[in-house]
Length: 352
Image (cartoon, rainbow, N blue to C red; front, top):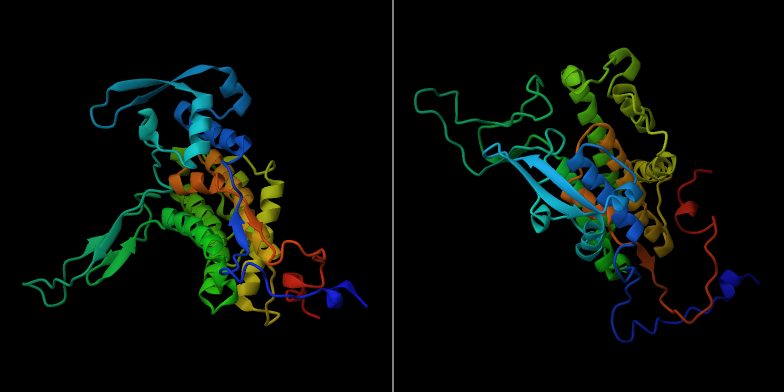
């Protein structure tokens, strides 16, 4: 008789006193290595040079200098690397005002014009025209696509920040509301959206890069060869990741683990979109693994930003510092059989 069928399935002792919550965030501040990594990227943006954290730490007191955007005066602030590290571990995000520093300004990747139009205003002298708002894309003044609204609706010239914030919010909700995993479909829809959003934000980043290179390669000092890059549509995401090196001359050779993690989540997304095989199973251990893929994929996005000279933004910093997710058994005191490849998600993702 196998272990699986002799496992004593009794009601969870937690269920007697409240809802069983199978997922939780690891208790304690983000590990110092994560905070040091983020701190080195933040300082690299301010100083214009990206160095290992050991070199920033060895510098003791640093000085951050910048030109004020309002009056064009030169300003500077003393700065200590370890103070930034400890603040990141405490706050789990970066607030420049805390250190009297300027925002990490993004010239084109994160910049967006957003229009929320709750009305329609037809012209008084023309029957075929109405008040129209145009969202000029930051990726390039020459970019031919410009979102427009002339009636009730909403338009964004970039969805990068929205996607990153949605990724962060969905991850938090999946953990803090994990008791709903066993009830209805709301939690399941959030899981589908979490996986889809991760793939969308990477794809969105790569398309930003492609278009920026197509229209502004001379400004950036990049190389754009459409024949070499191939058409944007109908290409595998793994091939699109090569665009980073082909355009900037700085390939993602040091991101093999991050890319491998992303491709695993991309394959999961494909299954959740196409459902071939047309079924699904997953365990709390599977879900914890998918939620913890956030760190590696956020690092992939940070590595791309370094190569395209774009700063980290608030939601990406929060994803880089996000606490690991732990699964929690319904009956902690009972013996648990290790999960094998014949159960959980693996049992539903392979066609016979």
